[in-house]
Length: 424
Image 1 (spheres, rainbow, N blue to C red):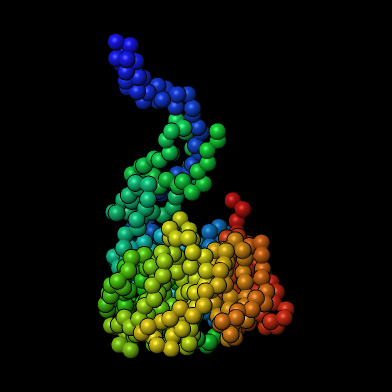
Image 2: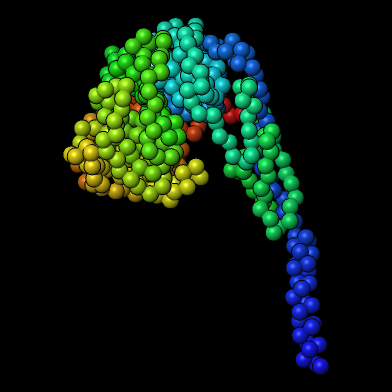
């Protein structure tokens, strides 16, 4: 009898334990602070009417960059393009801004600028930077934006801006702060709880960075989306004509780099090489697979240089530079691996290799011997994103602005100017 009573009491305690446990949890509360963004919608007509030169705007969130002649075209993420007069690199002048909502990428040929406007491509005449005009829209050529946290944009309108809101909520300690809203984009990144190309300056084609998703080769513009390589004929520069779309065979394609008759495409799973002898029909001729990681790539006649980095979007853990031997272009071989902190964009001019190592700044190497890279100079204290090294000036896009370094004398590489961001 005593034994059965003991068993009964034990069973009763086990039965009530989940409820007792929940009561204990309910006494523990944590405060979570996070941000959310409310979209500001405009009609297509309203947005298009405002795509023109406007007064210069402060740089707040710099992205992709293209250099052409005396001008720098710098993307303001999701908002448009800054035009910077760089005739004097020691004193660049921010002279105009083009409002292009949803803009992330750009390319230039002569006086013609190509840019994405969410799912559309807009072609602009920039012969007079102070009076830019639209020449054509190619509609629906890019995939719809995919947002996390349950947000879905109104596909009948265009998101012209975002209004940021901060909020604080109390929640039981046993739960993670997960919220979903179809009407707002939720940003938990700061959630806290308490308790190259070979073109020269006379070339009509702009020189883009290694993070680019647009590339121009002769009379074609190539763009990459998550899975596809798309070809437009720009024989008539202001009238792009869709020609072809090729599935790259990988998910999360990120970058494209043109070199001679090849396209080097970086994805989170590897590097892909395409031959464009027939410019409208790119043909896959080689690839190199790696662990999942973000993957910008540049190349020269003998080697491809690939940076792998960890990050929330990439879900990888590698932070390194991989150098691939291209003797057999159809079968690139891994030659050397160098560890880095968090490498992003890179550029090469002669034997100088420039690498944006995220929070570890800009690093410049003598790459005459790829098996023995030698660090020449490091600029710390800046968080770097992408770089274009050309004509003895390195343009560096960083979290806090646009930097320019003079490397005419490799023994005295130095900063000559900085265009800072708004402190708003």
